[in-house]
Image (cartoon, rainbow, N blue to C red; front, side, top):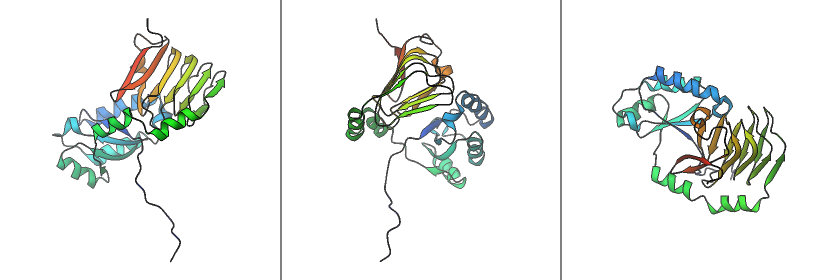
Length: 233
């Protein structure tokens, strides 16, 4: 009997979901291009699923849609929540059809696995003394991250648990990188290029409200991000 050369297993991976609100691919490309320009490294090569729920009655050129996303450096994986005809057209363009179990996904996000939670609790917090400079990336695998300084434009800090920044957050901060929906980003001054918790993310134009430039915290709630003051009066 020959030696086994592989294992085939099921697993769960975080995928970004692009929910289309229009079949106008030219307008979509223009808006996506502007969004990506604000955080190009975050989106480069990102696997993405196209949610068609809002445009089930529309006719789409899925080959053009696939090529548009590839040109923008995404990696289109498949589609979900479309009509039967849309799904058939997507398959012809080489895209998979995925089942989007929203309720299951939310329950998984609200109740992270015991293994993941224990991993964060058991590992000592990673402490970085000083500023994380442009071009640098710090990853606190299986634990929280504390930065005793600022995070510069073009820098990235990532943690499987919480992210604490005791200075200005100007770059990118990612918490709950391995699926912890209870993770939070804390910073003394919010001027971020991008924040992400458990796969949900906002880029700078979505953050520039009342708390821009203020002490703030970012957490996930009901499958989307929630921004609030760091200290509540």
